[in-house]
Length: 139
Image (cartoon, rainbow, N blue to C red; front, side, top):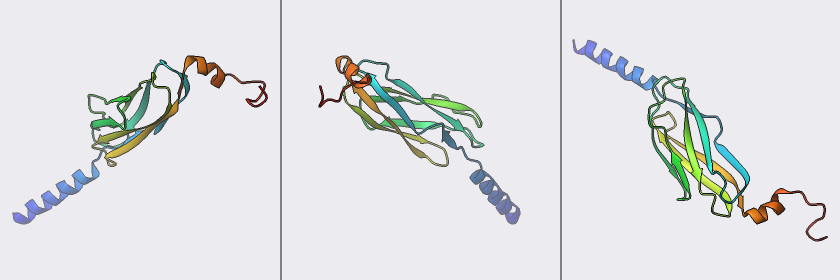
């Protein structure tokens, strides 16, 4: 009887080890490009659960208070997609270089995502976004 229970226990443990959620992002970087101060700073990271168990995103955090990530509320079932919404405060005129850390029950429990870009003043945006005929030295 003990041998049967031991064999069933080992079989159950080996089965549960193979069952795992897997997270695959469409892209691990979002490039805002050059945007004007006050522009819409909301972007989304799309991902798919390629595993065979529900994916639960337990925590999403950012490297700075100027970036607010939002995790999905419900588990993502196998084969389904979800999004992590990221809102960057575009009232800060600076280059964007931030990291968003995603923690889940996936086979890779911690994933680092990146956002990058440049926020410019509206008055400066014309000079940055438009092509000039002369170089700065020639002007």
